[in-house]
Length: 228
Image (cartoon, rainbow, N blue to C red; front, side, top):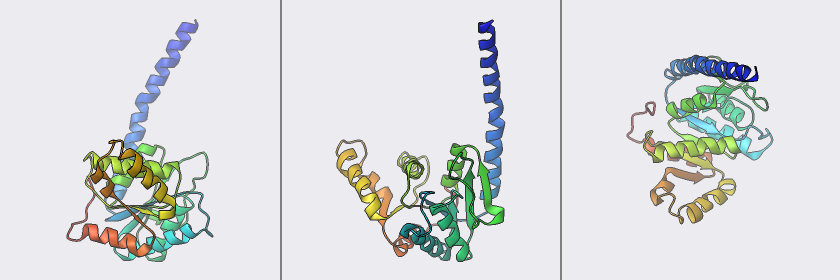
């Protein structure tokens, strides 16, 4: 009896996994249809826990405003903290403000600065991450936690392995990021686990002006389009 119940439960699980494919396909189709008409954008990442009164929140607003004024839309994860600041900066500049929301048991709720027709909801992190990479012409990475690091290293890996075309990746806040970057240079590079040219994929900056300079310098003479 127990054996039969075990097989029944296993078969039900396999059936559920198969049907999940259609939900995943639906998220991809919806994302592709909405994102493909938006135009050149820059994604801003960072902690959902950053408060309004913190310096990096205000700096993110200023960066998003400057990037918007330079002609790019802003994409964030749609939630609070740094994400909210990014969308707020785009909103204040009258630019395109996109939010790729994810259903989480904590800390995630969409912020009020996303354009009403550019707010997308996802259940799957991997589908959402594809949208970030496919429709971004650059990553601006503010101080954050594991999710921020996940997005950062996924982008570096995809570029390093030639799975996507190169685009600028900018770490903002040398005080926050320098220790990690020193470890990458002094430990990872010294161990031979990466190549010296891999370090060229990332720039460390501190100001909104530097962010725009890096992006504009990269795309000088380039035709902006989705990355793959």
